[in-house]
Image 1 (cartoon, rainbow over the protein chains, first blue to last red):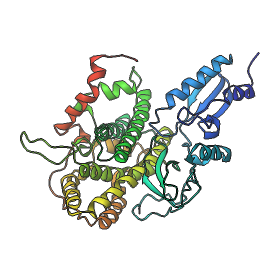
Image 2 (image 1 turned 90 degrees about the vertical axis):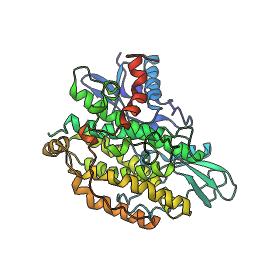
Image 3 (image 1 turned 45 degrees about the vertical axis):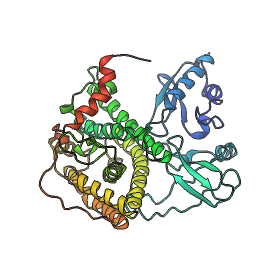
Image 4 (image 1 turned 120 degrees about the vertical axis):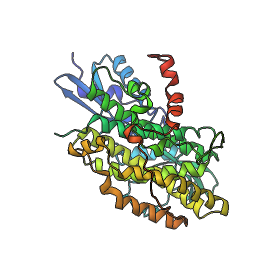
Length: 165
Length: 261
């Protein structure tokens, strides 16, 4: 019997991000599509950052789960349209916050490439521990490519902010 | 449908992989922990971009080419990167003089390069070469963060202490002449423009000048006068520094060809 598209979603639904085990690949938008082609079923994944070292692990996890479920499918990587944090579901954002990572704002509509010194995006980032917006950026680059380092000036806790991308 | 020539893809990829390698030299040696992480992340993005470009070029070239054969088994004269990205992480030296890494040099270089690349990727994301456009759209998001990071530090250094200002200005004086290479044509770029898939980088010069002027004004730094020598790294004629960098980057792959782990 051939697996249906729903069977494949069901087989892969439990897979989580190797770095952030509280959100699934589907919620993050990394597991992008499952579709029927003349060649059989195609599972489409997309990289977050170009150099994200977790992508190899993610592809292995997808293949292993397919194999475990006895499903034959091709796994392909698709770049366009480029992955964006805007695809992240509200549930995923709530889970990130509960895990101690401030979820991303929607990407800034001002995408002009010049005028970088005086920024237009001044939306505050709320501390995932105490909720205070009295926070400050420590570094635009954090423990993984997708996160920035922040510090809460009220509860004094450092925390990760999932950068809008 | 027009596609960008492979040599042009290699020019973009070589810039990214060589600067990625230079930035990675700070890994474990950053001036502060946050900057150590930042440079490693920038480097990771650049190497990721290079991989996507090498993979695309390798697929189109066929004949057994792979991302690894392109990165590890071409010699220095086959690399098409700007001379700017291969220079060491310190200023010019004479004779046997040695120098520690200088963070101002690294930051100023990243600034000059990422200010160009936000414009290049922005233009290329509209390329009729759909594969290149997809890579450009991803790389643009990353280049914006690289430019934010570098521009912030250019301002902190320039508008900082007397020492940091002097070192930032010295780095700028040293590196700025190398940006002339951006604006002088090469046969590879001419062919790429003729393909219809690639924007002429010279049309981006006014926008690049504006980013530079804006940041340098905030940083109280002076844009150096540029005259004379124009480097020719993208023609395959490099400074002496590239072969040492490649020696380190390619040594393992060449000592154990085909090795896996």
